[in-house]
Length: 108
Image (cartoon, rainbow, N blue to C red; front, side, top):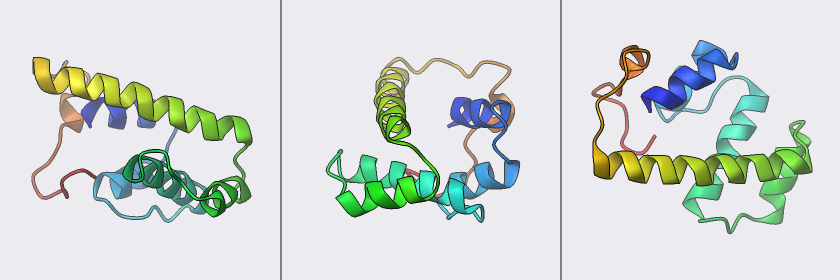
């Protein structure tokens, strides 16, 4: 979570959007809410998203290519997270300020 938070902030995602996602809430920004909803659905349904979900994602201003970018991001994140969960490396100094906080919902 810490690395993803740092990366999102460095990529220009508004801090309020990042914080909402960390808390398991829907971001106020409609485009980011669509990205979050599509990503959560893709993960939760293990890729078996409905055509309407893809259409809603695209209606929020995303492209067909970005559908596949989300899939790629989820895949890379899964590999990284599984490896880190098994290896248990310490957080690097740059991501320590973004470490998981008690009180956030599990799996957010």
